[in-house]
Each structure stands twice: as C-alpha cells, then as structure tokens.
Length: 309
Image (cartoon, rainbow, N blue to C red; front, side):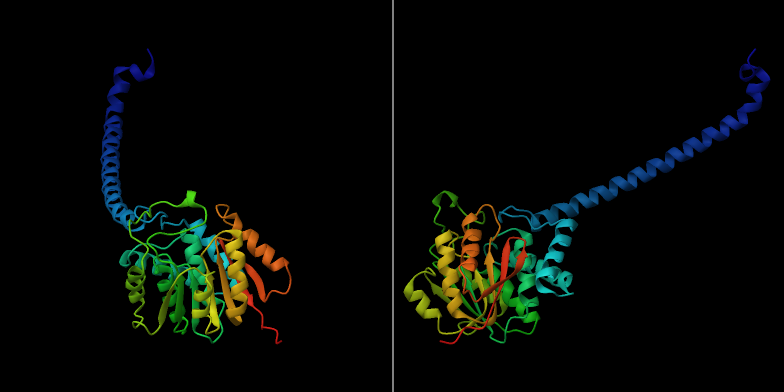
C-alpha cells in the first residue's frame, strides 16, 4: 500500500492539509482584495482619462495635445541644440502649459502638431531676440499662436508689439485647393476671432498689436507694415515654393539685426515647397539669414547685420 494512502498517514497529514487549505483561502482572499483595489483604481483612472481626453484629444482641434515622454525628450534635445540653452525643458514645459490653457480658453485652435507648436514657443524666447519688441506673424489662423508667443516672450521680460498679416476671409487659404477643408473647430477665420484671442494675452486694445488684413505679397500690405524692424518674424503664410521665396525676400528687408526668423513647416513632407524655398534662398548667396537649425518642423534663422549701401 502506498504510504500516502495509508490510513495512519492520512490521519497524520490532516493538520498539515488544514493549514495549507487555510493559507490558500487566506491568500485567495488577499488576492481578491488586491484585485478589487486594482479594479477601483482602474475605474478611477478611466474617469480621469475621460476628462483628460476631452481636454487634450484631437476632437475639435485636428491634432491631439497628448505627447509621449519620448516626444518631449526629443523636443527638449532639439530646443537645447538650436538655442544653446540649458533651460530647454523648462521652456518646453511652459510652452505646453500655455498651449493647453489658451486652446481651452480661446476660440478656434493653433495650427500644427504639439511638438511643432511647443517647439516654436519654447525656442524663440531662448534665442534672445534683439531689443526690438516688434513681432511680425505672417499667417495667424485664429491668433492663438500669436497670443501664446506674446505670453512666452513676456516671461523673458519682453513686452511684444505684435503685427499680424493675414487675409482673414473666413477660412484658411493655401494655393493647393485640394488641401482646403472645413476647419475641425467649426470656427470662421475672422478678425473679430483673432482680437478675442489676443485679449487673452491682456494686450490693451489697439496698443500692443495691430492686424493688417491681406496677403503678404500685396504691395499695400507690405507698405503698411514695413514701418519698423522686427525682432521676431514668424513665416507661416503661403506654403508654396513661390510664396515662401517671396516672403523670405521681404523678410530680409524688414528684420532687425540679430532678429529671429521662424519658417513654419520646414521639413514637413506635406509641404515640400517650404523646404525647397528656404534651401534655394540660402543657396542663392548674399542672404542676411543664417540657419541655426530645426526644431520639429520649423526652421530657425538669425539675421546678420544689413550691409550698408
């Protein structure tokens, strides 16, 4: 007879079996308690994620505002390389918070992905624009990026005087009509919308900003806003090769010595004309603009002193 089936052996093992059974039941209860706690925590996270998703997802915006740690680390490294600053992460963090806050409060949206938008907002102040407080934005959409840039510059002690050039005729325009579609926000691209958003920067009406309606290639528009030299110029208008070339040639004339020029969507495969235009402009020789580098899909340039004639 096998040992474990002997009546005496079974009798002797009963206390041990009872102890094992007790411990198994105890462990099972503990496991069930842990599982219950995990389920409660998961339910809480789901509720939180719903609220966070409503704030940061792409609905009504076109691009989500939920970057991964890897995306942020890459962005910080790019900002640090172009700006030479050790405060890149702080600047990127401030930029992200500004974007989320102003898109939540503002009308419409900012154009572009999170890395590109935050990269521009973080890098421009770190490049220490010259003393000129004048900022020119060619192409504004709803004015929320201009509002954010004003806030970011103010953090560095620069009280910007903003000039915006945009046709503001109800929709965003590009030469390639196939790209045009209803804006995901459903908001019309109009001057009153831009002014409402600029008010979020606490800019006194008609003092720290001006809006020039029209295209940047129009002679009357250029004449109206060429009355000063700009410490910062953001080029985000006509994305065709010809349009970008024309804007860069004009920027050469109106940017201040040492001024920062940002060309949006450089390196973006959706807009090949932008990269072609800048490369051609710089290769032609004699340009005042020196390429500092790229952050996400924006090129950053510095203006050399103008040559006296």
